[in-house]
Length: 242
Image 1 (cartoon, rainbow, N blue to C red):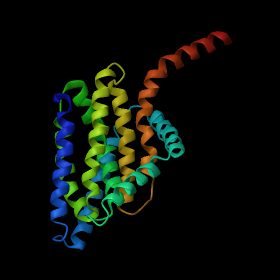
Image 2 (spheres, helix red, strand yellow; image 1 turned 120 degrees about the vertical axis):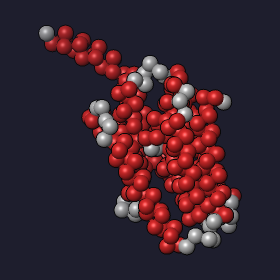
Image 3 (cartoon, rainbow, N blue to C red; image 1 turned 180 degrees about the vertical axis):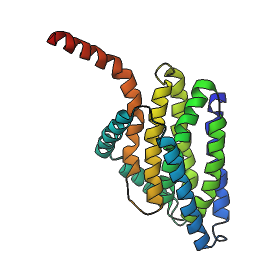
Image 4 (cartoon, rainbow, N blue to C red; image 1 turned 60 degrees about the vertical axis):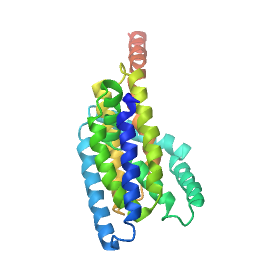
């Protein structure tokens, strides 16, 4: 449990905040909810921008977004998430808002950001949970507002967060030789671009299918694994020409 302490605290913070949000659902004026949601969207935008500018290989980030979007569209993660959320919504019919919207929006917001990726890697590689603890505080506060606006689906996103961050944390221990600082920077940059897209959706400026861009986050890892082979092919091709 020690290595997953940060992720467990994060999931608990979302559930706690979500419960408070449900309890306050009728007590927060609609105008206040809208203003707070817009304010949070701007904060999310700031978090995304601050992470996106810390990039090591810009071309790799661009390639990751392009290839990741192709993979994501072929699999259609956005539709899978929506269908899963709709299925849950039918189970909780009439028990607290539009479950699908709350589940999908909060799951994406809590998972694709720089803090989720970097914090989970720190937990796995160094047993350092400070970043995840800070994220837990932000997520808990966000959950209060989200749940008061979108209902019980926000609480269910704690499951997504636990699985997603837990997988990264456990995977980091076995991929320590691959997850060098440059790879972490590029993964953070890609994740931050996704969270910028999510913030624009929250502000109703765009309708980007952020879930279909999720595969882009793992492309820098694949590139790091395959790069030695690319070098060998390049050397062989160079030797063939000369």
